[in-house]
Length: 335
Image 1 (tube, one colour):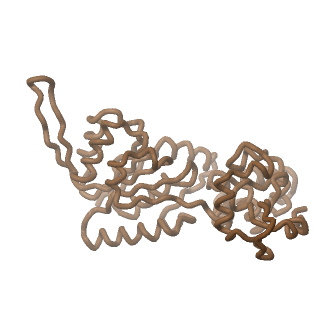
Image 2 (cartoon, helix red, strand yellow):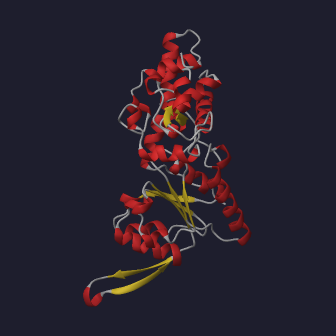
Image 3 (cartoon, helix red, strand yellow):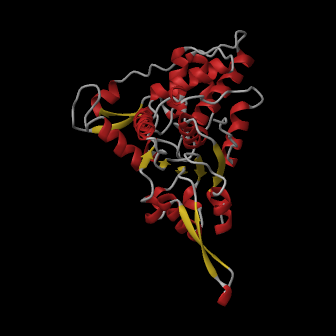
């Protein structure tokens, strides 16, 4: 079996420049190396093993999630786990005409993977024919015009399409129905973001204390690139202000205070009143509608674990429910 051929998407090229910055930060090599998204990885492993036992290609997979969560990386790792050739990686806007789609599919062998980034942006005509190709592995193409027009039935080898999208609601119903698995990426936990910070620091040979990694995790926008941006800023601050260059919790706190909230939060506004409603709902569900310290349900307030003024973010990872009494008595432990 030939080795899988991988060509990065435009978005992955942009991410690679940001991630590497000339320092050669390696991407995850396997699903096990990918931090977080355990539910998706577990289901994909089951599907891959099932397809192997059936001796049939893996069903089509759609991965949904906001920008920066690692959809393209996860889709590439799924294709790698299949141990098949990945002939083409394309993006929705790149396919405007039916011949473009046909040209992609005729060269694919049985079981090959097609990675499709931004599938919600594919044209309506191509989307309709892509549905037929995914379900029947065939397309009827009309050749010629007028009285000389004739229909050509083109069959393709069964393949696996692994698509990504930031807007599931923009994917047509017909196209959505062709996917055997539609997975939504979850927000990363503080521990997962801290693990990313430690892995990035190890790859870049940065000295990073465990409590500093947690501090960065609370300050980031919840994406791997956000973690890296905060980490590299903290490292730059450390090497300029401390001989060892090691990032301690105190150094991380000082460095992150230099960043404006717009640099490391999901909202351009500042202050408690700017907490997005979706974040408030997530925090309320997570904390069970009660104070996380005393369990009370009266006079509840949304409290930043790390204040925005000290580098904290307006994300669910950095916000908790406290009653008024516990909130007023809480001591600010961040010096």
